[in-house]
Length: 256
Image (cartoon, rainbow, N blue to C red):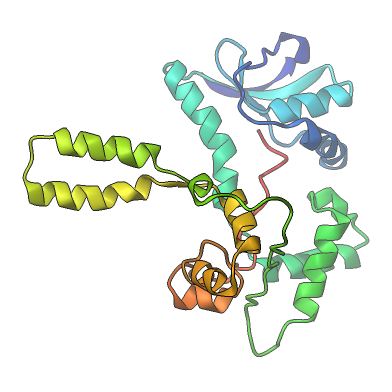
């Protein structure tokens, strides 16, 4: 069963295990629904449980709507429903923006006296984007400018033992050593086990701030911290791309 219909809000069932935090986004989404209408339906299963659209539900309640459009989907089982719910939230994190095209579109909206805040971008984000493209070198299509974090002393210097957890690596090595395989295979797998080391980058940043210039240089070369983007690229820790300056996109705040 798969169709869209108007559905009473009071009959919708919230999925209590929804892993997405959406209180902040619902306020903005309610403004967008007022501007565009309820374009995107809420996805529910055959029992009326929401699998995608909790933010839309909260926004609709803020607007005191009695009915919302829903798409009813007959999932094969609970595992498929859970998988879809997680994937629906995650997929927005995978996509990247083409900021050059976005800049053109935003300016087109402004020229049409359209409220650009209704795109979901706030004033500060729009201003930052405009400044970036207005000041870029015309001979260089893409900028590699990023916000370099300021590594300043904030507390006591962590010990070297606090910077990294070896528990997973050590447990895996024990499992490898106990396995009935050739020594050459064990040696190979043991080297790979160090991929399971867990680094505490917050403490690493504090350690870096306290460190000597030589230790800082070596930490930068290993990309435990990034000070010079070009060095990170040259050392193979970062790949150059059209959207490199956006190292970490914001979550898709308005869905889920």
